Amino acid sequence: MRPDKPRDPVAGPDAGPESPYPVRLSGPVIKGFGRGSKDLGIPTANIPADDLSEQHPELTSGVYYGVVALDPQNLAQGNGAEKSSSATLLPAVLSIGYNPFYKNTVRSVEIHIMPPLTQPSPTAVAHPKFNRLPDFYGTKLNLLILGYIRPEFDYVSLDALIEDIRIDCEVARQSLLRDAYQRYIVDDGKASAQVNEDRKWLVTFEGVSENI
Ligand SMILES: Cc1cc2nc3c(=O)[nH]c(=O)nc-3n(C[C@H](O)[C@H](O)[C@H](O)COP(=O)(O)O)c2cc1C
Ligand SMILES: Nc1ncnc2c1ncn2[C@@H]1O[C@H](COP(=O)(O)OP(=O)(O)O)[C@@H](O)[C@H]1O
Ligand SMILES: [Mg+2]
Image (cartoon, rainbow, N blue to C red; front, side, top):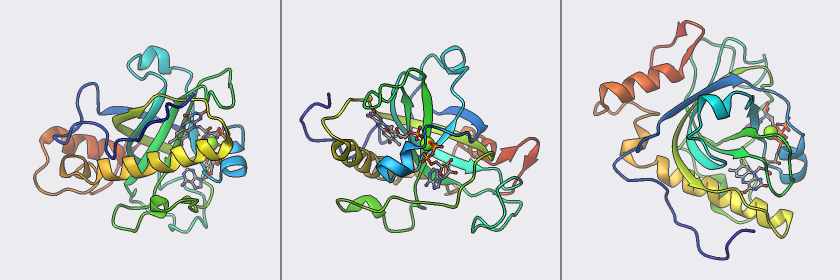
Protein backbone atom coordinates (compact mmCIF):
# COMPACT_ATOMS: atom_id res chain seq x y z
CA MET A 1 0.00 0.00 0.00
CA ARG A 2 1.20 3.52 -0.68
CA PRO A 3 3.12 4.98 2.29
CA ASP A 4 1.34 7.98 3.80
CA LYS A 5 4.03 10.60 3.36
CA PRO A 6 4.60 13.70 1.19
CA ARG A 7 6.13 13.26 -2.27
CA ASP A 8 9.42 14.82 -3.48
CA PRO A 9 8.81 17.44 -6.22
CA VAL A 10 11.60 16.08 -8.48
CA ALA A 11 13.32 12.72 -8.99
CA GLY A 12 16.93 11.99 -9.95
CA PRO A 13 20.02 14.22 -9.75
CA ASP A 14 19.86 17.84 -11.04
CA ALA A 15 23.11 17.25 -12.97
CA GLY A 16 21.35 14.88 -15.40
CA PRO A 17 20.48 11.19 -15.79
CA GLU A 18 22.61 8.87 -13.68
CA SER A 19 23.57 5.30 -14.70
CA PRO A 20 21.75 3.14 -15.85
CA TYR A 21 19.79 6.01 -17.46
CA PRO A 22 19.17 6.94 -20.18
CA VAL A 23 17.61 3.61 -21.20
CA ARG A 24 16.18 3.13 -24.71
CA LEU A 25 12.93 1.21 -25.31
CA SER A 26 10.96 0.88 -28.55
CA GLY A 27 7.91 -0.92 -29.80
CA PRO A 28 4.59 -0.70 -31.56
CA VAL A 29 1.69 0.65 -29.49
CA ILE A 30 -0.49 -2.34 -28.53
CA LYS A 31 -3.86 -2.82 -26.82
CA GLY A 32 -3.88 -3.02 -23.03
CA PHE A 33 -6.81 -3.90 -20.77
CA GLY A 34 -8.68 -0.73 -21.79
CA ARG A 35 -8.70 0.60 -18.22
CA GLY A 36 -6.41 3.61 -18.67
CA SER A 37 -9.00 5.81 -20.36
CA LYS A 38 -12.18 4.11 -19.09
CA ASP A 39 -11.44 3.64 -15.36
CA LEU A 40 -8.81 6.28 -14.72
CA GLY A 41 -9.28 8.92 -17.43
CA ILE A 42 -5.53 8.56 -18.01
CA PRO A 43 -4.69 7.02 -21.41
CA THR A 44 -1.47 4.99 -21.47
CA ALA A 45 0.20 3.80 -24.67
CA ASN A 46 1.24 0.21 -23.99
CA ILE A 47 4.29 -1.32 -25.71
CA PRO A 48 5.33 -5.01 -25.55
CA ALA A 49 7.13 -6.05 -22.35
CA ASP A 50 8.03 -9.62 -23.42
CA ASP A 51 11.83 -9.20 -23.67
CA LEU A 52 12.16 -6.65 -20.89
CA SER A 53 13.57 -8.93 -18.16
CA GLU A 54 16.32 -10.23 -20.47
CA GLN A 55 17.06 -6.99 -22.32
CA HIS A 56 16.75 -4.61 -19.37
CA PRO A 57 17.13 -6.36 -16.02
CA GLU A 58 17.89 -2.91 -14.55
CA LEU A 59 14.28 -1.80 -15.16
CA THR A 60 12.61 -2.97 -11.98
CA SER A 61 8.87 -2.50 -11.60
CA GLY A 62 8.02 1.12 -10.89
CA VAL A 63 7.23 4.56 -12.25
CA TYR A 64 9.70 6.40 -14.50
CA TYR A 65 9.91 9.59 -16.59
CA GLY A 66 11.43 10.26 -19.96
CA VAL A 67 10.95 11.48 -23.52
CA VAL A 68 8.95 9.85 -26.34
CA ALA A 69 8.64 10.15 -30.10
CA LEU A 70 5.97 8.59 -32.32
CA ASP A 71 6.81 7.43 -35.84
CA PRO A 72 5.29 10.14 -38.07
CA GLN A 73 5.20 7.73 -41.03
CA ASN A 74 2.53 5.50 -39.54
CA LEU A 75 0.65 7.87 -37.30
CA ALA A 76 -2.99 7.36 -38.29
CA GLN A 77 -4.46 10.07 -40.51
CA GLY A 78 -6.60 12.67 -38.83
CA ASN A 79 -4.81 12.51 -35.51
CA GLY A 80 -4.41 16.28 -35.45
CA ALA A 81 -0.72 16.30 -36.23
CA GLU A 82 -0.82 15.89 -40.03
CA LYS A 83 1.03 12.89 -41.37
CA SER A 84 4.47 14.42 -41.76
CA SER A 85 8.10 13.46 -41.87
CA SER A 86 9.23 14.91 -38.57
CA ALA A 87 8.69 13.37 -35.16
CA THR A 88 7.92 15.54 -32.14
CA LEU A 89 9.63 14.91 -28.83
CA LEU A 90 7.23 14.89 -25.90
CA PRO A 91 7.59 14.46 -22.13
CA ALA A 92 6.30 11.21 -20.69
CA VAL A 93 5.64 9.38 -17.45
CA LEU A 94 5.34 5.61 -17.40
CA SER A 95 4.73 2.59 -15.30
CA ILE A 96 6.47 -0.76 -15.69
CA GLY A 97 5.06 -3.70 -13.78
CA TYR A 98 2.03 -5.66 -12.68
CA ASN A 99 -0.27 -2.81 -11.61
CA PRO A 100 -0.79 -4.09 -8.04
CA PHE A 101 -4.11 -2.22 -7.82
CA TYR A 102 -5.41 -4.45 -10.63
CA LYS A 103 -3.27 -7.52 -9.79
CA ASN A 104 -2.22 -8.17 -13.39
CA THR A 105 -0.42 -11.47 -14.00
CA VAL A 106 1.66 -10.13 -16.88
CA ARG A 107 4.06 -7.23 -16.80
CA SER A 108 3.22 -4.17 -18.87
CA VAL A 109 4.96 -1.00 -20.01
CA GLU A 110 2.44 1.87 -20.09
CA ILE A 111 3.33 5.36 -21.19
CA HIS A 112 1.27 8.49 -20.54
CA ILE A 113 2.33 11.23 -22.96
CA MET A 114 2.16 14.72 -21.49
CA PRO A 115 1.77 18.07 -23.28
CA PRO A 116 4.92 19.97 -24.35
CA LEU A 117 6.79 21.57 -21.44
CA THR A 118 6.10 24.97 -23.00
CA GLN A 119 2.36 24.54 -22.37
CA PRO A 120 0.66 24.94 -18.99
CA SER A 121 0.43 21.67 -17.07
CA PRO A 122 -3.09 20.19 -16.97
CA THR A 123 -2.12 18.15 -13.88
CA ALA A 124 -1.16 21.13 -11.71
CA VAL A 125 -4.70 21.11 -10.26
CA ALA A 126 -6.63 18.46 -8.33
CA HIS A 127 -9.03 16.27 -10.39
CA PRO A 128 -7.49 17.30 -13.73
CA LYS A 129 -8.39 16.39 -17.27
CA PHE A 130 -5.34 14.35 -18.30
CA ASN A 131 -3.70 14.90 -21.70
CA ARG A 132 -5.49 13.04 -24.52
CA LEU A 133 -4.36 12.70 -28.14
CA PRO A 134 -6.22 11.02 -31.00
CA ASP A 135 -5.57 7.23 -30.82
CA PHE A 136 -2.33 5.96 -32.31
CA TYR A 137 -2.48 2.16 -31.90
CA GLY A 138 0.02 0.34 -34.14
CA THR A 139 2.36 3.33 -34.33
CA LYS A 140 6.02 2.73 -33.50
CA LEU A 141 7.10 4.51 -30.35
CA ASN A 142 10.64 5.32 -29.17
CA LEU A 143 11.11 6.04 -25.49
CA LEU A 144 14.19 7.30 -23.66
CA ILE A 145 13.84 6.68 -19.91
CA LEU A 146 15.73 9.38 -18.00
CA GLY A 147 14.92 8.62 -14.38
CA TYR A 148 13.07 6.60 -11.75
CA ILE A 149 10.29 8.11 -9.64
CA ARG A 150 8.90 5.43 -7.28
CA PRO A 151 7.85 1.80 -6.87
CA GLU A 152 4.36 0.65 -7.90
CA PHE A 153 1.83 0.45 -5.08
CA ASP A 154 -1.60 -0.91 -4.33
CA TYR A 155 -4.13 1.79 -3.30
CA VAL A 156 -7.14 2.06 -1.00
CA SER A 157 -9.24 3.45 -3.87
CA LEU A 158 -9.22 4.30 -7.56
CA ASP A 159 -9.19 8.00 -6.62
CA ALA A 160 -6.03 7.51 -4.56
CA LEU A 161 -4.33 5.81 -7.55
CA ILE A 162 -5.40 8.64 -9.90
CA GLU A 163 -4.15 11.32 -7.47
CA ASP A 164 -0.74 9.62 -7.19
CA ILE A 165 -0.46 9.41 -11.01
CA ARG A 166 -1.36 13.12 -11.17
CA ILE A 167 1.55 13.81 -8.81
CA ASP A 168 3.79 11.54 -10.96
CA CYS A 169 2.96 13.78 -13.95
CA GLU A 170 4.01 16.86 -11.97
CA VAL A 171 7.20 15.19 -10.67
CA ALA A 172 8.06 14.10 -14.24
CA ARG A 173 7.40 17.60 -15.56
CA GLN A 174 9.47 19.39 -12.88
CA SER A 175 12.26 16.83 -13.32
CA LEU A 176 12.33 17.30 -17.11
CA LEU A 177 12.25 21.11 -16.84
CA ARG A 178 15.80 21.02 -15.46
CA ASP A 179 18.42 22.06 -18.08
CA ALA A 180 20.32 18.75 -18.01
CA TYR A 181 17.06 16.92 -18.89
CA GLN A 182 15.32 19.47 -21.11
CA ARG A 183 18.18 19.23 -23.59
CA TYR A 184 16.99 15.71 -24.47
CA ILE A 185 13.92 17.46 -25.91
CA VAL A 186 15.33 20.76 -27.23
CA ASP A 187 18.93 21.34 -28.33
CA ASP A 188 20.27 24.19 -26.18
CA GLY A 189 23.71 24.10 -27.80
CA LYS A 190 25.22 22.81 -24.54
CA ALA A 191 24.43 19.12 -24.98
CA SER A 192 27.20 16.52 -25.02
CA ALA A 193 27.75 14.37 -28.11
CA GLN A 194 26.02 11.51 -26.26
CA VAL A 195 22.90 13.58 -25.52
CA ASN A 196 22.75 14.69 -29.17
CA GLU A 197 23.03 11.04 -30.22
CA ASP A 198 20.22 10.00 -27.86
CA ARG A 199 18.00 12.78 -29.19
CA LYS A 200 18.74 11.67 -32.73
CA TRP A 201 17.94 8.04 -31.84
CA LEU A 202 14.55 9.13 -30.51
CA VAL A 203 13.43 10.46 -33.91
CA THR A 204 14.94 7.66 -35.97
CA PHE A 205 12.43 5.06 -37.19
CA GLU A 206 13.55 2.17 -39.40
CA GLY A 207 16.37 4.08 -40.99
CA VAL A 208 14.34 7.28 -41.46
CA SER A 209 16.00 10.00 -39.46
CA GLU A 210 14.59 13.45 -38.96
CA ASN A 211 16.38 16.74 -38.79
CA ILE A 212 16.13 18.13 -35.30
C1 LIG B 1 2.57 7.26 -14.12
C2 LIG B 1 1.81 6.00 -13.81
C3 LIG B 1 1.91 5.44 -12.55
C4 LIG B 1 1.20 4.29 -12.23
N1 LIG B 1 1.32 3.75 -10.98
C5 LIG B 1 0.61 2.65 -10.67
C6 LIG B 1 0.70 2.07 -9.35
O1 LIG B 1 1.44 2.53 -8.49
N2 LIG B 1 -0.07 0.97 -9.08
C7 LIG B 1 -0.90 0.40 -10.01
O2 LIG B 1 -1.56 -0.57 -9.70
N3 LIG B 1 -0.98 0.91 -11.27
C8 LIG B 1 -0.25 2.01 -11.62
N4 LIG B 1 -0.33 2.53 -12.87
C9 LIG B 1 -1.01 1.76 -13.91
C10 LIG B 1 -2.46 2.03 -14.07
O3 LIG B 1 -3.17 1.23 -13.16
C11 LIG B 1 -2.69 1.61 -15.52
O4 LIG B 1 -2.22 2.65 -16.33
C12 LIG B 1 -4.08 1.22 -15.82
O5 LIG B 1 -4.34 -0.02 -15.23
C13 LIG B 1 -4.34 1.15 -17.31
O6 LIG B 1 -3.99 -0.07 -17.88
P1 LIG B 1 -4.26 -0.42 -19.41
O7 LIG B 1 -3.30 0.33 -20.28
O8 LIG B 1 -4.01 -1.90 -19.52
O9 LIG B 1 -5.67 -0.05 -19.74
C14 LIG B 1 0.36 3.68 -13.22
C15 LIG B 1 0.28 4.26 -14.49
C16 LIG B 1 0.98 5.41 -14.80
C17 LIG B 1 0.85 6.01 -16.16
N1 LIG C 1 -1.67 11.25 -23.79
C1 LIG C 1 -1.71 9.98 -24.20
N2 LIG C 1 -0.76 9.11 -23.80
C2 LIG C 1 -0.81 7.83 -24.21
N3 LIG C 1 -1.73 7.31 -25.03
C3 LIG C 1 -2.71 8.13 -25.48
C4 LIG C 1 -2.73 9.49 -25.08
N4 LIG C 1 -3.80 10.08 -25.67
C5 LIG C 1 -4.42 9.13 -26.39
N5 LIG C 1 -3.77 7.95 -26.31
C6 LIG C 1 -4.25 6.73 -26.98
O1 LIG C 1 -4.94 5.97 -26.02
C7 LIG C 1 -4.47 4.62 -25.99
C8 LIG C 1 -4.42 4.08 -24.58
O2 LIG C 1 -5.63 4.13 -23.89
P1 LIG C 1 -5.89 3.07 -22.74
O3 LIG C 1 -7.24 3.41 -22.20
O4 LIG C 1 -4.73 3.00 -21.82
O5 LIG C 1 -6.04 1.74 -23.56
P2 LIG C 1 -5.20 0.38 -23.55
O6 LIG C 1 -5.67 -0.38 -22.38
O7 LIG C 1 -5.53 -0.27 -24.86
O8 LIG C 1 -3.75 0.76 -23.45
C9 LIG C 1 -3.07 4.68 -26.57
O9 LIG C 1 -2.69 3.45 -27.16
C10 LIG C 1 -3.17 5.81 -27.58
O10 LIG C 1 -3.62 5.31 -28.83
MG1 LIG D 1 -2.87 1.70 -21.74
